[in-house]
Image 1 (cartoon, rainbow, N blue to C red):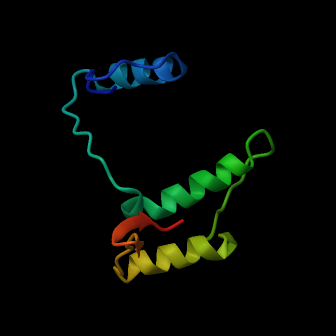
Image 2 (image 1 turned 90 degrees about the horizontal axis):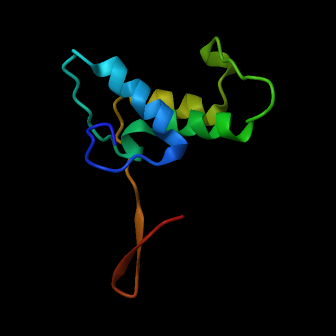
Length: 97
């Protein structure tokens, strides 16, 4: 959508147009990052989604983060890779849930 290769769904059309305006005159590279490479952002987005419509959440210090977020940050700090594990069922790979 950002590179104008796909049709823009109306639900996000205003946001995509704003991105187009922001990147005018700039050299911008858009790169896909798999969920495993962005685990903390994915975790925090899920927290925000679960609190949608209520007061906002703000974590100003590491000590106030949920324990899972602390674990993810510490794993990133020691550069421990985060892998997606899949089970083998009947000789085929099946995504672990």
